[in-house]
Image (tube, rainbow, N blue to C red):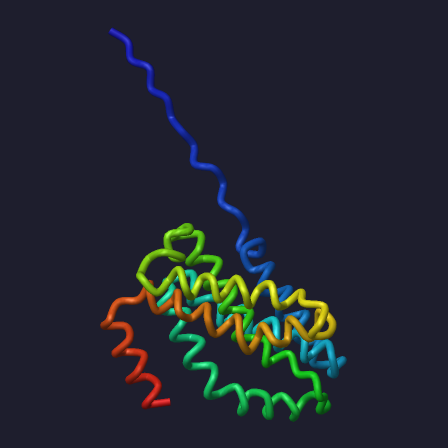
Length: 184
């Protein structure tokens, strides 16, 4: 009687330096951004904050919404703290942080729930029609340029997206969010 034994070798793991390469690149770029200051540092801070706010979305939609609710009251403080390192400018990208993360959260919600979110409740079709009107208004030539349309979308279209987040949440999360607002 004979038996054949086959041994499998485990693939060799990657070097620790390979796993630390993104961290090393971030550290090097941080040093370069701090040394050069100005717009490069502001862009690096903006990118880091967008990533920091979008990171909880990998856990759940609730965690991402809590991250945005924690950031918004602190936005003014963070904005003024950056002026210790960079010069003051009238166009500050920190105001686009929450809208960017809101769009990412909406895309993830749309990916998970498909088009059902647009007809999930009795109010959803009307809100979806309003959202469509707001979207078309971005490209309205009578109101001004495209920049004017996107600026208006920040104030009209993006807050309507939070309606869909509210549909997806449980009532226990709403209680938690209201408590968080009181504390903040």
